[in-house]
Image (tube, rainbow, N blue to C red):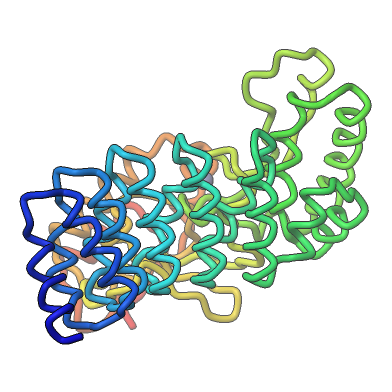
Length: 359
Ligand SMILES: [Zn+2]
């Protein structure tokens, strides 16, 4: 047995691709962790068959050291390699794979999309919810069904079923709770279905708008940190749909990628803050230095920043052409931590904000 293992390991270096492939397969089945390093080297093999089985073997070997190399294989030009890498990453269950697997939901090959849905269901990370909801309309193949199962695993079964089966009353009930996620899938289906369904979707969207209205000011796009507003359908061909509007992010026009119930947004300038955001009791703090762009905020907090960062921030505000924001800057509450206070910083802030306090 021992010799067998050693033979297999040395076969991984054989000039014959069939031998390398067979060695990979066998090593994956035996499951000896000593095989991880040598098998991993074959992820770059010139033969696609070898790369393919190497991915599969690493999925079986279960070492988290292989997560990053397997993520690289998601860009392989051969789809079966990508497919096996996706399956392996699903088995390994490491959250570093979440974002790359989300990218695979748009892979040109349906098998890769299927496998990515399944893998994301296994990983159980909530970041996958919105991208999986987008896949629910994937009627070209069974990806929609696989997405549904994955969403059930992620605890979003009721929403997923309501979207997939167009259960309008359920979708309206979600909107009543301030959940805008039913909007995008309905909007997406508008132009692709028959007239009868189209009418039903239109009616549902009108009702959803009504339910979302009281919550609309507290809905914030997760990507742009921008407030929702009534938005018209983009590129409408049918005149019947031209007047239809729905609540969505002012920038990306999407309603799925949402942080609900956000009452206040604070732009924080703090070079010690490592996270992009923190949410406490409906108050969202966004790390401006990390986001590096403007968004919709009501308050400013300068905790730890140099004059250069502050000036760059203020220049952006001066040049901001966004109508929604422009008129609000002057009255915004701006606090500066005592340790960060300098006459230069205070003077520049007071040029823009009426109300600058040192705390
Ligand atoms: Zn957005």
